[in-house]
Length: 202
Image (cartoon, rainbow, N blue to C red):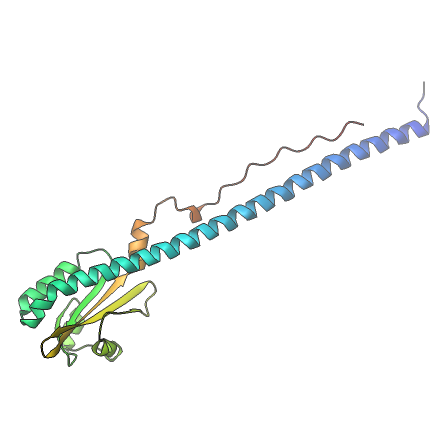
């Protein structure tokens, strides 16, 4: 029996409804996938930022601890003006991770010992380092170089400051060494794609 025009149109209408339902389900699944991906990336960025702040604070604490230990050990050498022992102490400190430079200077800014050959040649600290001579206690400030902290303190004797200690600690280098290879910020896991919803039977 031949189908009437109405029957044919009805079949076409049903087919269009089925296709439309499948397209809408697929679109909703794609939008949900993009939302989950964006949320995952945002969570990872937040975690990485928090971890970086924590690591930076930890590195700064390590820098201060290293400086205080160095200061307590070298103070009697500076007061006794034992140049060779001071040089050896500076060389030993450079073996520690993160130490960028070490200077021991006299109250007039002349260099008593240094890890910088250029500074050893000039014999005095540059103008940008004169702030060291004004420190009354431990002073910590950020260097112009990213991720580098500069620490300075006087070596005080009976007659006043006998010298000043000045070192730089590269927190960025230390953090890079300790950062795991599979740091979360390097890759963003893809959320599992949801299965497309089956169109409702009509």
